[in-house]
Amino acid sequence: MTLTAPPRPRRRLGIATPLTYLVLIAASLVVLVPLSVVFLTSLKTSEEVAGGKDALALPDNWLNFDNYVTAFSDGHMLTAFGNTAFILLFSITGTVIIGSMTAYAIDRFEFRFKKLIMALFLVATLVPGVTTQVATFQVVNSFGLFDTRWAPILLYMGTDIVSIYIFLQFIRGIPISVDEAARLDGANAFTIYRKIIFPMLKPAIATVVIIKGITTYNDFYIPFLYMPSEDLGTMSTALFRFKGPYGAHWETISAGAILVIVPTLLVFLFLQRYIYNGFAQGASK
Amino acid sequence: MSRTVSTTSPPAPVAKQDRTARHRARQKAPGGRSWRDLPLRRLTPWLFLLAPLALLVTFTYVPVGNMIYYSFTDWDGVSPDRSYVGGENYTDVFTRSDMFRVFAVSLYYLAASVVQIAIALYFATVLSFNLRFRNVFKGILFFPYLINGVAIGFVFLYFFQDGGTLDSVLSLVGVHTDHAWLGDPESANTSLAGVSVWRFTGLNFVLFLGAIQSIPGELYEAAQLDGASRWQQFRHIIAPGIRPVLSLSVILAISGSLSVFEIPYIMTGGATGTSTFVIQTVKLAFQFNKTGLASACAVVLLAIILLITWIQRRLVPDERVDIV
Image (cartoon, rainbow over all chains, first blue to last red; front, side, top):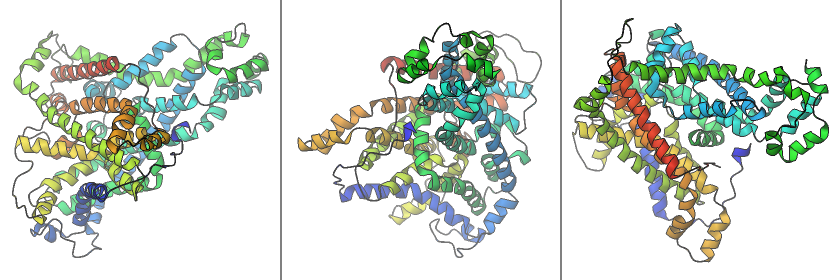
């Protein structure tokens, strides 16, 4: 895709001094130590944690997964995983369809009020979602969607303008002669979108799925606001609810936090390249 | 129906011309082509835009409109009756000291953003050069940005708690302290702003790195031949190259520090003077049922953010930010 041009070979002479490495290692420690300590804590027994031992102390038994079992069973993490997967599935599918349709309509057609429509989408990127929730809440509520999984799904679908821009940028790179050729073969606009344009958008779809997936998975504000029921917890809100009952049980909270982080880590390790490019694009739109 | 459309399609030469000068050709659509004038043809883009526009209007523009309307009422969010109170809510926002104080908290996060941008810039410059384990360091620095905010909140609650990670690390280097890091407003806000630096530096770093790497390598080679130092290379080659991304980061930093919510809400719940504007707005609206006042707060925040964006567009007009 146009946006993932292979990185130019670095031919500059690297004269990295030992000091540079020292700073880099220090920064890595700043990132890794807080996370590692929580991982260590998640393997400790409550006696070890409460025993006033050093937070950096290693767990006595490295295979003590009891806290994970507690987090899973009592912390409703499995339900949360299901809810998050449900929301992810629908909101990402919706975002991809809506984003690509919008981009197709805007880029491939001339119509009245096109400028106005584009301005509407553009201005909406400037409106920060957190500020309008006071009033969005009333809209969602009036549809009777409050405390259902459809509230976050619709909100993630309807307020994602970034992906429209990613699709728009990509669709511009597809030559219009492709459309024309299909039209000569008797395809109508919808067939061209479905059979020609949509399959060609694969790289852009991958980008949108990844960044949308990670941001949706991590979002706390919307599920917290719209799905207060215990059985409608997502990964974020279910973990947040650990705060009450496990207030003093750091080993359980740590296990919960690690459970939430591990999927992100796996996705990151396998899809690094897409992730860097995707987030860079997402932020700059 | 698709048949009729196809038979009246423009002849091949037009398509060919389209390929070469696509944009020009598209703007002045070849006239007299009957299929372009079919009512269905004119309707087509709207069929595609129907659902997206409905969602956009329902979840962005209707709320913004309602919010402005609510902000002039004393509505509590539930009861059917609400009365018009004029600008009273706005007077409250700007004159009640407890309402306006939260803006001061934003200053901590604003200062943190400056630190964050500086750190990100340093590492982006360093890692744009060839060095060992480059990708490992890049991955480690970026990863915090991807982590769930609630998990980060808990990681750092443990980090800052009495006898937690920070105290343990400090005692390793011989500093013994029983300072309650989240205990007083100043220390708590500094700590929370620190968490925000930890979380968001990675994004700035990757943005800067992308911009630096899109600068042609020949420039550096030429500079090196001319005997330019590392600092001179940064000053005259890298700095101009990342200006667009830098200005974008500044805007994100300012609007970000005004709308901080997750980290302080999860870690302290807004206690000990760590409440931010958004936390306060959410509490007003959903705990104290003061929808009118909360709407006024949200309108003020929205206006500030739009103003900042507008100023930025004025100062750095029409800057295209293209990364990688």
